[in-house]
Structures are given as C-alpha cells and as structure tokens.
Picture (cartoon, rainbow, N blue to C red):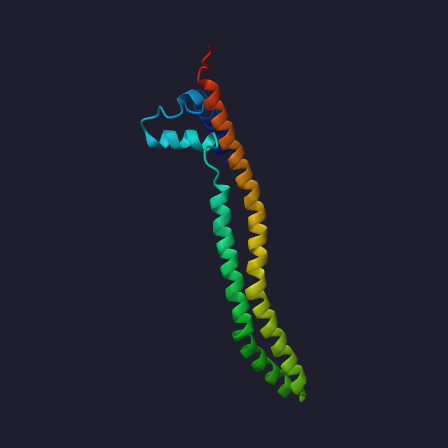
Length: 157
C-alpha cells in the first residue's frame, strides 16, 4: 500500500511538471491539434467556469425536491397521519377529532407552504450566487477586450 502511494506521488509530480511546461502556458492556447490536450489546457487555465452549470443542476434538483416533498407531505402524508392517528387512538382508547383535524391542517398547509415558498427562497439564493458569478464573468470579458485593445498599435498623426 505504501509503495503504491509513493509511486502515485512521484507520478503526480512528474505529470504536473510536464503539464506546466508543455500544456498550460498561454502561448500554447489554440495550438493543440488534439482536442483532449486543448481541453486540459482550458480546464487548468479556468477558461470556462463550471460552477454556473453545477449550480443550475443543484437548483433544479432542490426545487423539484421541495415541490414533490411538499405535495407528498400535503397529500400522502395526511393519509398516513390518519392511519397512524386511528391506530394510536384504538391502542390508547383516546380519540380527538380536533387533534386529528389540527394535524391534518398542519400537514396540508405545511406541505403546500414547502411546495410554494421553498422554491421561491431557493430562486432568490440562486440568483444572489449567480449575480456574483456573472460579475466575475463580465470582469473577465472586459479584461479580454482591454487586452485586445492594447495589442492594436496606436496611430499617431
């Protein structure tokens, strides 16, 4: 086991040095005929921000999860709540219709609240994070445009 870890560390150091010398420098951007090398160059130079795509997937998953769980809590959860309440009432010989309706109303409105309000709250949080990411992307674009503008020779009269 230790031998494998040592070999892995040595191989990682060698590959890192090779990548830093042969793939990552800016002068090699766009010169690779093989797409995997260009992908590696873009990946390690942060040419594309993957966080935006990952956040979009997580936001979609969380929104759908909130809606489905809220609706299940409001509907199926109430069915199981009635069954549990009746079983408990029979076991302890105590039944309160007010307590049952209170529990059903709590499940119904709680589930509907989760199904409606949670995706709205998630959207607001997602937009706040996304505004920061878009700010960074715009700064990168502006920097790129300024660099291109400074590369063009100035015409002096």
